[in-house]
Image (cartoon, rainbow, N blue to C red; front, side, top):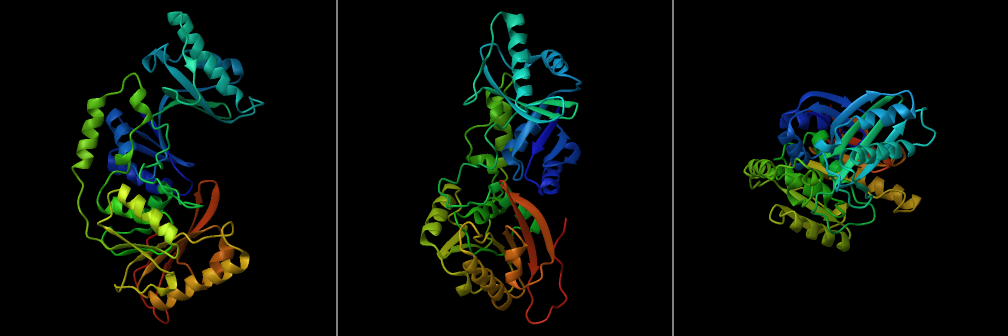
Length: 384
């Protein structure tokens, strides 16, 4: 099967590596997506095990068009009865960038009509459109004259792991947190500090990795479970094989925050993920934390402009830079924030920078190597 895993901008390379490890072939990186080949078992496995995929699409048609009529005619040729029945519900999600159509939503209506007419001619009955809880979600992607029609095997985005029942004002996307951990090259055994933990996303994603817990373990639903060809025994096989790799890591992970409300939320989410024995949680201001190890990783998602006034931002980021410099020599720090205007107050030169997106918000991920006094020779940060 031709499959596509969608992801956040900037995480395409780490997702491609994940897919190759899971068994994907013919892996090709695209914009916010990775295309690959695999069978049904791999499709189930990527949904259950991938930490950086947002959704997994199964391609069922691929063609070129010159007009609206071309779209309808080619969509009508798809053997829709292989994937759904006349009494099923469905929806069409269009992603369109083409001069052929004056309105980006119109191609979705054309494909909807093609599906309905296909079943009306075949059975005399027609499936119904359900935008809220459809049995089949059809993804329509049109770029210029190129059309791809796929089935969404995830439906509910994969960043919704299922463990986060509590969250603050601006929670970090779970897929983004996992992607940052992978970009940073954290080795699953070096101590990790999450000193502005909020609802605990960095710490939890690290804990899942360290214990080899599949991110899909807490989900009760994947889109493919409603498909006509859903193989429950195959899904159970995928789950069993993945769950048999679980371990109990002894890595030190500390989640802290100056807010008691935030640490309370983090504790609940950590417990939901089954990681209370692995992750320590404490209420503390970052500048009061002292490392217990000579080296480690620090991952931070500090507040930014929407949560603090400009003068507070200056003081916060200056404090972060001073604390990193004086309290954490020998550590590697990774900070994600909305832009360079805040990073400059840290007063340290990042070794690497990446542009990433937290939802719709463009962010900068900066990686720092921390030294005591002047820069000493050391192992450089990993760079993709």
